[in-house]
Length: 453
Image 1: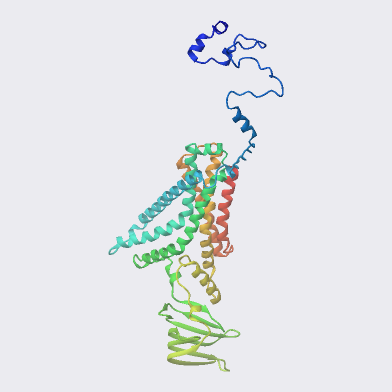
Image 2: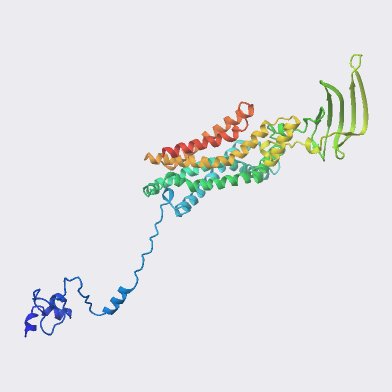
């Protein structure tokens, strides 16, 4: 009866929820009141509040005591990832996306610029194309000229492609999101610089393997097929004056079959007097240190007390002489300096300097050959930094504006290159300035724009 009266109010809770909670089971009893008969565990513990009170668990007490006896496990050290330098993980998804987009823009820009140039050039020269099968010759001409133009306009295409990439990122809001995540402007330039470096190396090897041959072939088609000479004879004229050893001066005609036709050799003795002259229809090497003159006329000049001196002339079908010069030392390669490979340029510079020939234009071509691929990297960074600078000033730029800024920067770089080339060719500047000033100008533009951004 006591149990029924004590739990009469909580009957519904017991019926709906099954076993009642401890609060309901102990309802109505005070702190000092003991549990009613028939109900266990609801009375107050006599040891509660003491430090040595036993731990009461409902079931599993032995397991709890066994767990308490086990040694405590040390927590594993937390691996803290250091923040990436610049705000983005190197070679991550951001870098891959930027690199892929930049390569696509560069290919489209370079193709468009080359196509535009060739179209304008064809429209300007269409009246000079004539003769039988002129269409095939024109296709070959512009195929070779396209390779040359693509090589020359690659830095400009890199500038425009970098400017377009930054503009697209700004218009889609991706540039603002990257900046909000802590990505620095120079961190965005890292994949662009990597791709530009690869393209610069590729430009150098393409220039050595493809462009120099394409340039020579295009010029040959214009001269021999369409009779457009220009200054072709300046670099392909066969005759040349060469300074030899022991006072000898060679005047050699075009090189044919290992020899020169015609040929003249002058021997000068101190202080400056002509001692002997040999004129021949052909001069060819006849062994180590030996030379053979075909249909030769030898004229000797000697001093005498009579006016005019003594002149003796000897004619011979074949005349052999010993000269210390070799055939390789007298060989000068014809063609424009830009149509020679790197190794040939260096050989011609040394040979021309030894033989007393003009060497400045060949040195200039060597320096410009080395500077062209180097300029690609700072040029691309300058185009990117220019748009980032405008984005930092919160000025929205359309795609046409980005192209215009890229063209303006390309024209400035081209103007610097032309001025330095003309000054170095005329002797106003050293030849090495043509290989240093354009890359330095591009580096200065890139550094300024990134500093302002």
